[in-house]
Amino acid sequence: MTEALAPVRNLGNHGITATRRIYEGGFADHLRASWDEVYTDRRLDEEALALLVDGEPAGFIMLRALGPTDRIYLRYLVIAADRRGQGLGSLLWEHLRAHCVREDFTLLVWDVEHPGEEGIDDGERSVRERRAAFYERLGGVVIPVLEQTGTEYTNPHHRSDGSSYESPMLLMATPLGPTQLPVDDRTWLSGLVSDVQRYRWERAEMR
Image 1 (cartoon, rainbow, N blue to C red):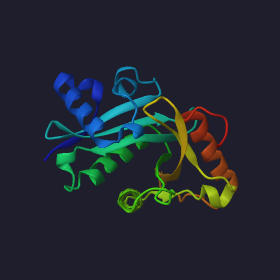
Image 2 (cartoon, rainbow, N blue to C red; image 1 turned 30 degrees about the vertical axis):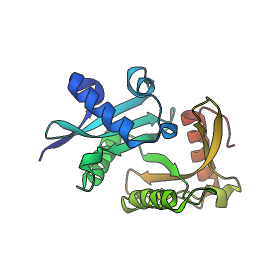
Image 3 (cartoon, helix red, strand yellow; image 1 turned 135 degrees about the horizontal axis):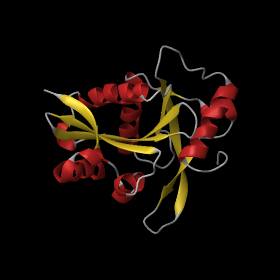
Image 4 (spheres, one colour; image 1 turned 90 degrees about the vertical axis):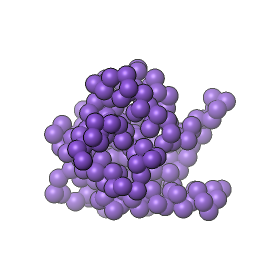
């Protein structure tokens, strides 16, 4: 088996269509942007990349640089539904980390839906717990935003009618080198949250 990480724009029509199918099949509508936003009209500070296994798309990631910092935000990571359970998630993660290191980033940041959110059923809670545990197995650390700042970390989601609401999330990160994350340093933590809010969510402060 051969694998590589490649820009989606370089895949040709077949590869682009297959990658789009992976992306759109991997997230609920309220958790994903349109394909136009992700690929066709993507920002200059974003990258859309596909995991190729034996030349065929098997996974997708999207990254956004957090402004002029050395931090990068993982917007999306997904493995094709028919390729899950084959270790490709861990493989994609290895390629992702190597890519970020080559681009001179020192910290990879992302968020996942909070398994403790009120009003969700047991099935949804289990899905969220497994997702967070997957990233923790790969070295991800939950950033204790509420404990350190007294403010819950949230980000906006959009309903089908165009309205939006704030949803509690877990902010996670992993260093791209040998250092440990200073999660008990409130100044560092506040700076990280500020970078995410400003450069990912384009707002000045936490909500």
